[in-house]
Length: 325
Ligand SMILES: [Zn+2]
Ligand SMILES: [Zn+2]
Ligand SMILES: [Zn+2]
View 1 (tube, rainbow, N blue to C red):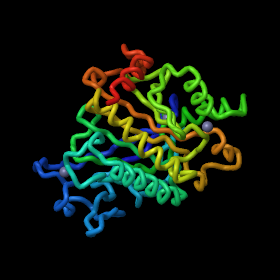
View 2 (cartoon, rainbow, N blue to C red):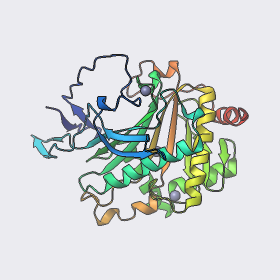
View 3 (spheres, rainbow, N blue to C red):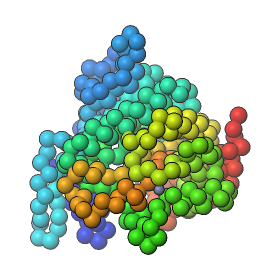
View 4 (tube, helix red, strand yellow):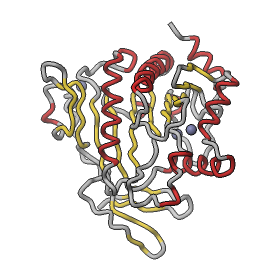
């Protein structure tokens, strides 16, 4: 029986005892039209005029987290553990098996982005979920063995480690300076301009100052907004869809494998965030992190090793900018 256990030194939650079901590789893509019977039934579909699905979302066939598992928080001596309560959904982004981001139309990106927002909003209604994570891995080096374009949605009763670090640092910055950390990053990057890939009315696309991987890129709204799923205006949504497609086209010219992760605010309807965290909307600022992978970045790396990148973020930004056609 799988369970969450908390490491006392790092505070990290780990899933132990998860057994992956044996999946026979039949050479048939379960995400292709006509093979819907190979996946669980859809939670949500977006269809065209003829009623054919264009994107569909369903529960993962072999989920790490399960909605019917009890949270069952308990102790073993002074250690903490709990059930692997959660949700794990797959979004098949398009009917076509072969499409990648650079061949997506704006309408395809819009559909996927809307599906992300919809699933986040829906899962945030469940008070048991503290965080909804949306990510996409593309290419075998990024850990995706199914080529068909798809993304993952995870809802968990804990905030993932990387996001907790971002929340803590953003909160500390806010408490000291009464300003949002990422708002400060946006103004500094636009002023310095050396790592900027693109700037539009509503978004900044930038290679972060301390990029972990070559061509790492963040897409950050220029005006403060804590949640990806709550667009302030239609103009912001439209701008994001264009910026997102443009950025991914630039990335795909240079890297065939990548991970994309959306960092949005944690769930505030949950019982876990009390009065003391009401400022979360003031100090957390949503963004998308794109982490391109290349064969050298996939080699074994110790957990506590520093990231080392030969390419300077400033050079990466220039190359991403210059590759514009
Ligand atoms: Zn397929
Ligand atoms: Zn901000
Ligand atoms: Zn982040």
